[in-house]
Image (tube, rainbow over all chains, first blue to last red; front, side, top):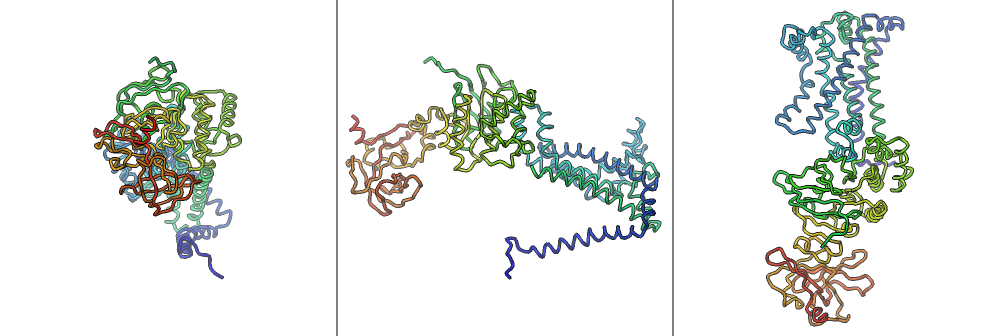
Amino acid sequence: MKKKKRVIPGFSLSFGIVTAMLGLGVVIPLCSLAVFSLKLTGAEFIATVTNPRVLASYRVSILTSFTASLINAVMGLIIAWVLVRYRFPGKRLMDGMIELPFALPTAVAGISLTHLTVPERWIGSLFAKNGIQIAYTRIGITAALVFIGIPFVVRSIQPVLEKLEPEYEEAAAMLGASRTQAFFQVILPEIFPALTAGFTMAFARCIGEYGSVVFIAGNTPYQTEITPLIIMAKLQEFDYEGSTAIALVMLLFSFLILFVNAIVQNRASKR
Amino acid sequence: MPDHTQTYVELKHISKTFKNFKAADDISFSVEKGKLIGLLGPSGSGKTTILRILAGLETADSGEIYIDGKPVSQIPAGKRGIGFVFQNYALFRHKTVFDNIAFGLKINHWKKGDIQYRVDELMELVGLTGLEERYPKQLSGGQRQRVAFARALAVQPQLLLLDEPFAAIDAKVRKELREWLRELINQVGITSIFVTHDQDEAVEVADKIIITNHGRIEQTGSPVEVYNNPRTPFVVQFLGNPISIDHTRFKGFRDTTADASAVIRPEYITVRKKNEPCPHPATTEEGIVERVAFRGNVMELTVRVHGQHLTAYRQLGQELIHEGENVNVFLQRIYLIGADGESVTIAVDESLRRENG
């Protein structure tokens, strides 16, 4: 039987590469996670993942990640807007700097942030005067996560904003809309899917962030201890089953976030 | 001469420069109530800029605009009582057809029941009833234009501006839509100005044409007037399918001034077979047909006369002319552009002139 010719050649080869990459890089490690934690009995598993200290760490992780991603959604939108809509000297440089958090080793970011925000240093001292401590508190964790998450939001929104013709706002203006009305009723709905994508990606990334947070967090149990840190701690105690059990919970949560994103994107693409 | 018609829109000495580019250079014109005006010109001639200044989307460097007798320069775009149809329609992609049309009404705090009534009314007007819940993506180009039109009309503007309203639509639907738009504007009775670079469109649709070039108005008048009596060299060379010729070599125009350059349109060239009657033998030329092209409703002939290539049309019903055939060629009239490059005169064939006394 004659094989059907495809217009774009090399499908079988490239598809093979895709499955191999996904299998080796994503599926197998994730499965091993499940296999490892399966060594625990059901009761043991539940006990491990609902340990009060672990529960508290979920709270810290989710709360700080959510807050940071929310801040990033707003700030990232403003940054993307400025970078797309205006021309000013240093724009290229600024645009390039957005990616720095991707490139910088996260530990470096964590250490420098900590240095700046301890009450003795200049940013820290400014806040300390008003009775706010940044380093070694949840505010510090959030600050680190804002730094980590910002490129996700900016880079998701930028291309969509670039495609949004000024005619769009002009149409709204001709129909009597004020600038605020035009933004909230015409532009925001248009970039909402991209904003959600940026927000959820940043959120999922922040949930798993370790390097930049451990230095600034202070890691006080029940207060500023994030879940990835507990996983690390368990690993260092050679409690592989316990650490994978908690990692599995984190994984499920990340899936949940990305699932929400998928729903939003799916809805948007139908329009 | 006193003007009895009611002027609705008036532009006085509008100028606008972008960097080094003069988009509008001392533009003045007025539009009577209820008329449909076509701003016609090549791209970059400033026609869209004039429309945008009128709408309030662009600010003029100098000059004043009056709508219904009131100066509007200080009034923001949304409050001028103008509906605007954008070239690519700029429909809100995430809103349904209903919400697109209702947008202006909601902004203006109409009551829910009134909005429903008004949108229903408009949907019927543009013939889209039943498509309220569709998204713009699910509509054809023509349907999108209708939505854009309904949206612009929703808040009952007194003036409708359309920027290249048919540019994004394929040729077949375009013709249909032209007639539709013309009828609709008559029905609504709204004063309208549209911008186009397509002369057929302007000639067919508009009550009055304003031809622009390099930010200036070249000529204003009814389509027939502007088409038949072009007054500037630009208009001569812009309208119809003009061909430049050396008129001094043609018998019918020997007495016309030699330092002018001449332009002729295909419709003023008659090509006859050798065996067909020749009404003006004294000024008829002989030529060789070089190319015959079928243009759907006519045959387009390229004829060489005195070493010059002329384009002429021939009706389909007439006996066929073949490539390489010797034919009689008669030029009825030409446009002479003076040596100063400013004046345009019409020169009629000598035999015709004598006939008509």
